[in-house]
Image 1 (tube, helix red, strand yellow):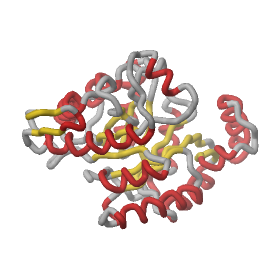
Image 2 (spheres, rainbow, N blue to C red; image 1 turned 45 degrees about the vertical axis):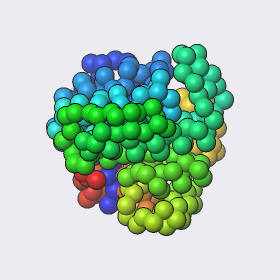
Image 3 (cartoon, one colour; image 1 turned 90 degrees about the vertical axis):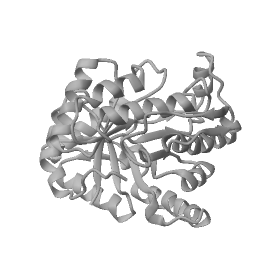
Length: 312
C-alpha cells in the first residue's frame, strides 16, 4: 500500500548508527539524514557514506540536499559524492533535493556562512539545471552546461544504479511543483493533511500533463511526525507531550498532519493518505533517537502494509 521510511537528524554518531541499523532490520523502506550547516546535523554526505555501511536493504539518502549555489553543493561534487554513496550502499541511494525555504531567517542563515541565497525563481532554475547536469554526468557524458559552470566535465566511475539514482524534489509552492513535474522521479511534501495533499497532488498531476509525463512517473511522499502508543489513554498523553515539545495548541492544524495514537488510529490515517495517492510516508518519530516507537510501529503497523523498497 504505502512504503514507510524514517527521517533522522542529530550529531550523536553512535546513536545514528544504532537507529539506522534498527530501521533497516525492522523493514523500513527508506532512511534519510538531514544535510546543511544547521546545528542539529553533522555534514550530511559524510554521514550518509558512513551510515550506508550500517544498512543492507533500505533505500537511503539526504532528507534533502541543496544545490541552489555552487558554494552549497557544486554540481560536479554532488554527482561525485552521490556515486560514492551509491557504491557504498550497493545501489540504494536516492538523491533528494530541496528548493530552499522562504521562512524568515533562512536566507540570513546561509549568508552568515558566505553562501548566497538567491530568490526563489533563481533557485528553482538552478535546481532544474543541476538535475539535468547530474544525470548526464552519471550517464558518462562530457558535459558542457554554462548555467551551472560546466565546460567539458566528466565524472567517473558510473553509479551502480543505471541510468542513475532516482531524483526526488521536496516542493510545496506552485513553481516548485512545476519544476518537480518536469525533472523529478519523486515528489515530497511536508506536513500536509490528506485533503491538503490531495490538492497539492492535483496541481502536480496538471503539471505532469503539461510536461508530457505520465502521472505514474513520479512517486509521491509526505513528511509527517509520528508517535505510536499502546492505547487511547496513552494517546492523550502523547499528544500533550507532542504539543508541549512543539509549542503547539491542542487544536493546532499540524496535529491533523501527524500519525499520533494507537495502532487503529494510525492505520486509519495511513488509509486516508493512501486514498489520495501517497506512495511513501517519511516519519519523524517523536522519541528519536530512542528506538521504542520505531520498533512498536514496525511490529504493529508495517505488517499490514505491502509496499517494499522501490528501485525507481
